[in-house]
Length: 231
Image 1: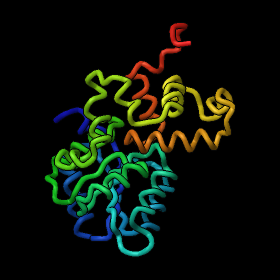
Image 2 (image 1 turned 120 degrees about the vertical axis):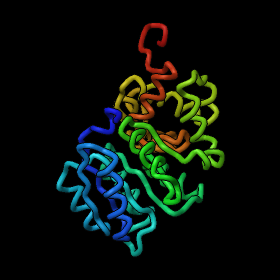
Image 3 (image 1 turned 60 degrees about the vertical axis):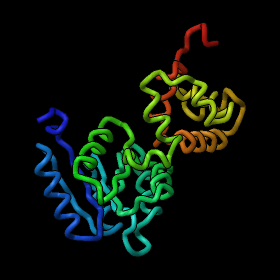
């Protein structure tokens, strides 16, 4: 068994169908050593589990009935716990639904019709801070695919520059250098809120989950160099 499957982790499964929770829990317990699984069948129970702390990964259904589910719930999870990996598990294969979940901050999207290996791959990537989108659906999401598939193979800065504005590229460079929004705002003589808006727009355009991923991308592109040659 690979060492990453032996890692101690606490997974929260959120799905209103009991058989999905039971089946998914059994699958995870069988696949991973040291895993702890908590299940919740509604928004309130899920948030209570998260407030107790110790959750390392969330696997959440997208379209739970009632006002407690849907995109609002995914957005709430990602906004409230920005460093917590959230994988959306849904019967939907609509690219618009997938992109919306990624825009809100989900690190992965797995369809319920996909084989279990797809979920395991998504979990592995999530624990490594990498996004997961079903291979069969990437063609409908060229920007996400471009960033995910090409950045590790020497993608040129010009590819990213085509997807974001000049100002956002400047901000990406500062993020890669480790500057906070407040520091960036001071340098550009803009409000911190304006920088936040630019960062959010940049993340959506690049299909990234958070500033951390943006920083990693910027460093891979060589934007994090603070040497004299960069000034």
